[in-house]
Length: 170
Length: 170
DNA sequence: AATGTCAAGTCAACCTGCCTGACCATCTGG
DNA sequence: CCAGATGGTCAGGCAGGTTGACTTGACATT
Image 1 (cartoon, rainbow over the protein chains, first blue to last red):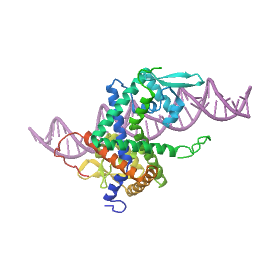
Image 2 (image 1 turned 90 degrees about the vertical axis):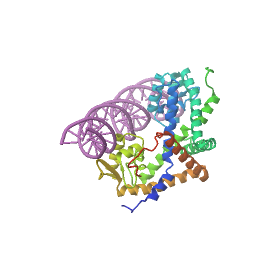
Image 3 (image 1 turned 90 degrees about the horizontal axis):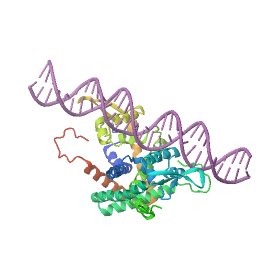
Image 4 (image 1 turned 30 degrees about the vertical axis):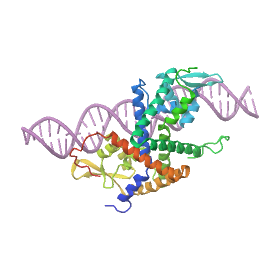
C-alpha cells in the first residue's frame, strides 16, 4: 500500500531525528515528579504553570512586567499566576516606592520555604534520573541542555537591545 | 530580611539543578520551529498538539484507542485531534474489518507527504542546533534524551509480566 | 438464544493556561 | 502641562486537554 512517498525505514529515521518527542516527554515527567513531591511536603495547589513565576522571581522581589517578560508571556497571564500564588500564600504584592503604578511581587516566608524544598526536590529527581542513565550521562545532559537553552535565548534576543525594536523576528 | 531559609547562592544552586527549565524551553523552541517550517511548506493549520497523532500513527493505520494509549491521553482527547487532522486532510477514518466497533486512522496521501517533510524539517532544525552547540554535543544530547525517555517509559510501564496479549501489532 | 461484562468510540460539560483587546493610572520628556 | 509610553487590571476567547455518561458491538458463559 502506498509506497509512493514514505516507507518504514523513513519512519525510523523520523523518530531518530525527532528530538522534540523525548524532550517534551522528559520535561513533563520532571514536572509531574516535582509537583508530586511538593504535594508530599504540604505544598498542595501548586500547578505546572506556577514554575514560570517561581523560577523568575528574584529574592528582592520583581515587578509583574519583568516577570512576564522573563517568562516570555503576557502581563495578564503572569498576573493570573501571581494571583493564584498569592492566594496560596507563596508571594505577596507590595507597592514599588519608586513608581506608584508598579507593584513588586516577592516571596513570603512560606514562599522561601517552598524554594528550599524545590532545591532538594530537584536534586532528588535528578538522582532518580541518574539511576536510570548513570551519573555522568546525566551531568553531560544537564550541561548540554543549559548550553543549548542559553544559545537559543541569545540568538532569539534582539541584536540591539538599546533600540525600541518592535520584535520583528519570528 | 529573612535570612532564615534561602539565600542568593541557593538560588544559583536551584537554577543549576532545575533541569526542567531548559528542557521545556528547548522543547517549545523545537515545536515552534517545526510548525513555522511546516507552514512554509504549505501545511497550515497544524498545531503542536497534532504531533501526538502524527508521531504515534503507524504506516498501516492505527486504532483511535491505541493512539490514545500511546500518547498517554484519553480517547476523547485523541478523537478531537484526529477530527482536526481529518478536516485538514492528513488522516482518514476507515472501518476495521476485524471489529465493527473500531475505526482505523490512517494517513492520506497528503498525510504521507507531511511525514516526508517532517523528516527533512527535523534534520534541518537539528542542523541549526548543531550550529549553536556543535555537532558532537548535539548527537550526545539526542542519544541521551532517547535513552532517558526510553528508561522512563520502561520504569513507568506496569510491571505486568506478558499476559497473552493479542493484537500487539506495530 | 439470553445475559453480563468488556472494549471502541462519541457527546457534553468543564478546567487550565495561556492570549487579545480595552481600559485606567501613573510616569516622563519636550 | 500635555502626549505618549509604561505598569497593571478587567473581560472574553481559544487551545488542549479532562471526567462522566452513553451507545454499539464483541465475546464468554450459560
